[in-house]
Figure 1 (cartoon, rainbow, N blue to C red):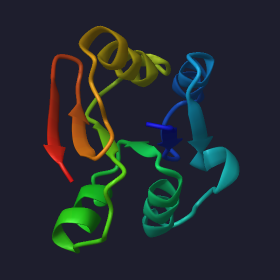
Figure 2 (figure 1 turned 60 degrees about the vertical axis):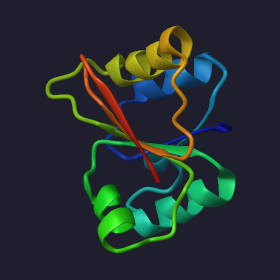
Figure 3 (figure 1 turned 30 degrees about the vertical axis):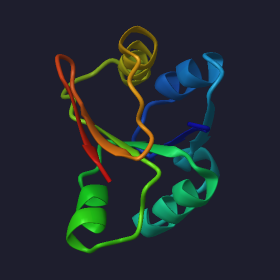
Figure 4 (figure 1 turned 90 degrees about the horizontal axis):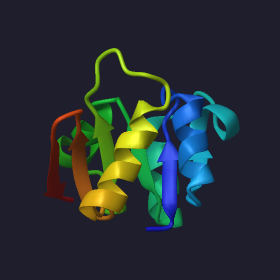
Length: 118
């Protein structure tokens, strides 16, 4: 895994936490504001980056609309989260559990991690 693409609604503290841990993180809010989801999928696929999002539309584009994509998506299902919490959960799953997010749709919540191959 080369790194991540953080969708527009991923808080900056989570992005900075991942960057501080040595991961490349492209922030859509910083670099590509208001870009369409299809463009984010194409960018992630071409760069080999896993998308971090709380937007359910990506799953629909891939599974229902058959958009060709295999890089990986982390769908965050968190309600009322601290700004750094998404980054903390991702790092915890990488370092403590040894999770890999490449090539998978991952549904991430506080107490659970579910994965499905793309």
